[in-house]
Length: 452
Image (cartoon, rainbow, N blue to C red; front, side, top):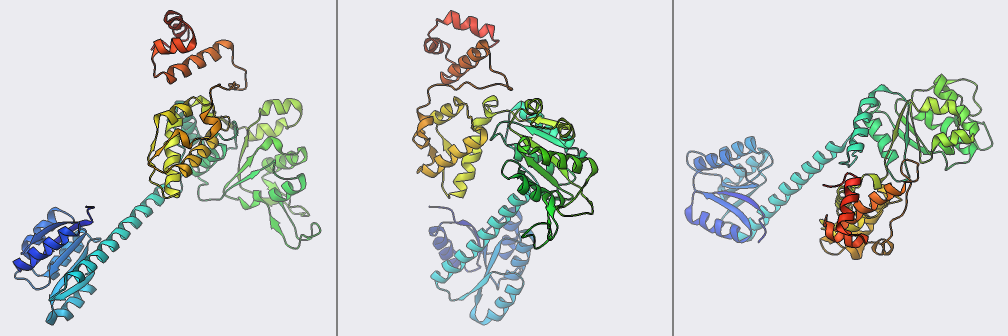
């Protein structure tokens, strides 16, 4: 039977105490009983209880002293008074001192069960709310980046170091690597953490709409401008503005943004008076920005203004140790959201995920785990819960590494590592899968520094 909670019963009538102990144990409570108020104080000094059920009138130490000591030691413990009918006014008075309720003698056992159950539920809800508050407080003002990858840890160390400097930042990386999350991490580790964080996708608007979103307009600036509107640059004063997909920004907007960064002021559309602005710019792109500069699609002077500090977020395929860690993180997240008791991921699923290149990076992994959590019925995420194309995956995709096509040796090294992971490090089986003998595999392992 499930333990409903710890219960201390203080009753100076031995028969009544024995009956209460018997009934409450059958109800599933962990019961401690005593006939002495003095002994009750000693017990409370040694351990905490969820509920204390105490007689009001006792020799030497009465129920009021038990209540006061209990509340001083454990404010969240609920105390229920047992009292004779004639002492009901005194029992009511104890409720003003913090007692949960009282039970009048002669009592019905059903009443005892009901009142104790109500007190337990109140104590449980209070504890849950306290835990929720603690959890919310632990995340408040923080951004959590889940990683155990050494390169990512170094990036986070650098981000924390430069965050208070207020300089502009450029973040590069493939789609889905977490560039916006990284920008938020910088913001919440900076002196601007109490200010607003805004993000805008520069490729999601026409030139006119992007200008309006960034710089705002004055009343009457154009047909339909019935009121003044502040742009995001102005609204983010004291905070941080993320310019996502910055290479998608039209050239005319790049000129206006450059002026805002240089002069720290802007003109709303239709305005004549410059407005001072105080905002930190963080730009992000999934393109090779140097290549865009060479093509003439991005201004070099704007690049220099934004690229005071730069970060390149590695793709998930280059931080494979994070795949199981992130998988369990997302599983816990979505199991809680879906109110499911899914706690495990099968080894087969982990192997498939570790062998996949994730062109969509962390975002794709999150989608896979969310889908799996939605389909899972038991406590484990199984292969059957994966997308069909992932289950049938047998060919590794070829990817650029740091913008370059890998050499044949690099591709061979990566393939041998993958086969060894699939075989659990069994070199004999790996050699068979590779179609070479064990001596040839040993030579290749030595060549790539992979003997261990």
